[in-house]
Image (cartoon, rainbow, N blue to C red):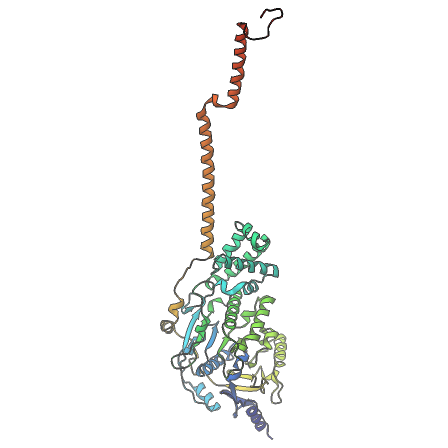
Length: 516
């Protein structure tokens, strides 16, 4: 049997699914597209997570667009992390050119320019719907892991949260948390130690420094009100397609601590908000994280463990997570092992180190008799990738060199005017973009300290007044009212009286022989 026939049969068999599936491209053998070797993507396994990897300029962004379009058409909401600012074009229809025409002809597809329903979200003051979360929503465990605290310090953070809950002190933003740290280190130390146990000033100082470090990466813009409801990521557009929420984070790509903080909180909130679903015909939500190495960069071991745990468990909620990065080695092995769909674009081998990485990358893919994987990875063209995924039984499909279909949306960014128009039409921007500054721990503690200071001042004033009154009363009594003076006066008076009586012969002893 010729190689082409065997290849076609292998791909047909390996990518045949009973559930709903969409064509993402066709297999390529010896440089030729084999139309009969259609590569299908089953929706049922899209909650098994995935990886999209490859060097700059190899087509990773366009693959993100294609997968997002397929999911949206299937009424699955999508979240896209836009680090480079090049994903917004999915909100506008694409346009035909010679390269697109040639590609769809090779793949046996029809190109239909289409714009998709998009919601622009932002962590900063960029155009879009603001994303925020309160410190209380993070909780002591997650906040401790983000700050990289040890067990003792984490226990102290838990005590602070308990104290705030017991005393109705809302922790909304970082200034609330900093204020309570300062309070328990000084004025409130005795109060807390009486109820909750010993407080170490060393621990409070360390935690405070960690919070300030987070602040310096711009975390103040993320913590606060109005807190974003993750249910607003699950919307379906009026025409029945899944809403594509693009989170614009172009201005925090140099702040890995803030980026990983936001991502971990969002994943934890999604996990906590939705029930166990079991095996669904299609996912409830799929998230694409571009430049995923930023999550793992500078992350503590505790934070990495938390991410790994959430990735393992969140798929049972019907949620799929896809990491997009230049080098698959950017993703820790423990997380990489959880990723069912792998789309590997070309890697470049400029150095001996690059060749070692490519060889190691090739070892992570299923063995195939049709390609030399480590060589092919460096020869893939733009918009081509090595693809493997899990079938409905959880078994990896054959590794295939796939020419991917082009996006039907614009392969470029929106203009400023188009962004303004898109935000103006948003159904949720008005809800989250209003400025709210509710009374919280910062204001309540300040008021409490101000009242205590006033009471101290009043007590001091009363003491001063009482002292002055006593002094004044003493002066008004006069010298003879003094008990010492009165005693001296009585002694002197008695002496004078006795002397006078003696002169008159009245006082003193009787003489001997006297008749009387």
